[in-house]
Amino acid sequence: MATFFSDHFDVNPVVLEKYGAFDVSLLTDLPLFIDPFLLFNSKQSKYRQLHDDIIQYLVFLKGKALAGQVDEHLLRAWYCFPEVRQTWLGFTEGGNDGRGLGMDFAKALHGSLHDLFPDFGEEQVTQGSHLEKVCLIKDGVGRDNISDFTTNLIKGYLYGYTEDFAKTHLREQQCRRISIRNVVFNYDTETWEAREFVLPWVNGDHVVLTPKDILTRDENWINRVDLLREFEEIPLAIPDQQLRAQVNNYFYKALTVRKDREPTQKEQMAAAAQTIREFPQVIDYYIRSKENNGGKATNISAARVRFSEAIFNAQIRELQAILSTGTFYKIPTNTYEEAHARIEYLKNVIENQDGYRAFYKDGKPLHREKDLQIMFRLVWFGTPSDVTSEANDGRGPADFKVSRGAADKTIIELKLAKNTALKKNLQHQTPIYQKASSARSAIKVVMFFTPEERARVFKILDDLALRDSRDIVLIDARTDNKPSGSKARAA
Image (cartoon, rainbow, N blue to C red; front, top):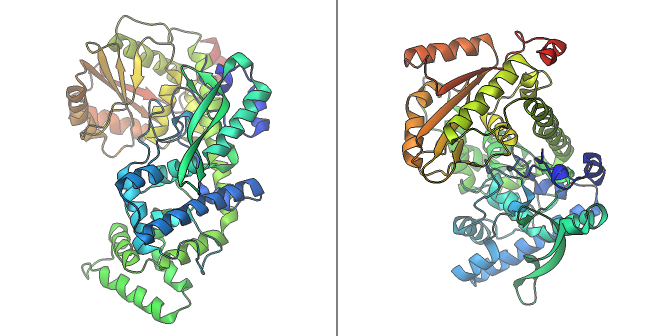
């Protein structure tokens, strides 16, 4: 079952482990990304040099911004990069085609360097400079933008890292020599230059490997959410008493709420955002606190990568092995019947065999629908159907669209029973997705892990008169009602 890099290239996963690379899926992006702070905080000089190179480029951009020498064409040339989709990491569901960095990102970063942080690269408060700093002011410049920018700026290292592995461990016919654009920035000509690499080649494209020790999941160590949530603690670290008083005064003045209740977290974060726009220098004190606790960043990121390996690699392989013994990978005549057949067989494996184990880690069930959706995609292969995440057309993206041409489309939605919006979703969203995508059919899959969640789902279905709908499939992933491993395997 060719799901992962090691499967496609017939490499023992232990070899990748020793090399330090993450064994990516070649079916869908996995929710991991490069955190530039891990480069900055690394004990390895090669990573620290990569971080220095990133800062050098940003200082170059800052100089151009302050000199007023950047028109729209230069913004595109210096700031706008496509996602390096060949890493198979990021936030695209059902494939690996991300949006990359467009003009919105370019203008936001350029504006921060020009107006808010003219001292970038010459900070006095922090131990070093950080790319994340110039992305903390505005909404819309999040972890995916930072990851894409970081990946592009260290692309030469990643391609060289992959080439070394390919030349050592892969056969010549498994690779191709390819010219890659925008690998090295020439500061004399102020242009990006291409380089050639020998790279793994599969399904009409190359693959890029990424070292596990620079990856994380969920959020960068330095991130806007933490900045806003922890804002009240930041002024305490400002030694300038006048500045500290001004920041506190502005924050509490911005926090205008009714006197008969405490401010909500949303109101506190909005006041913090307003204060930071007025006093951007407080960001340096937030970053310094993150630098002082850099060891936690390494440990937390390593634990998150291990979690992803367990869920998306090891446990998916086990689930695939169980599914392969039955009818899951046999192909019915159309997408609707194929979807139902696969869902029903998956339901049986989860409820009556050992399949439910794939959805637990350390005894705890998955708590994110995104992880459930990724796992579903990882076991869906060997099909003539095109299985993709439905594009967001303003109505919100459906989880999957299964299609065989324009006339045969089926929408699949995967939800957790604990989802607070489940009732509304079951009532309204599927018909909207179905109409938007011209799909003839739509199926909802709802997974529950406790008796309480089961009862909640059945009440919702009764309220909506949907208990008997074929197109709403419930999967019981509880642990307290499953057969023992030996009985399950014998069933």
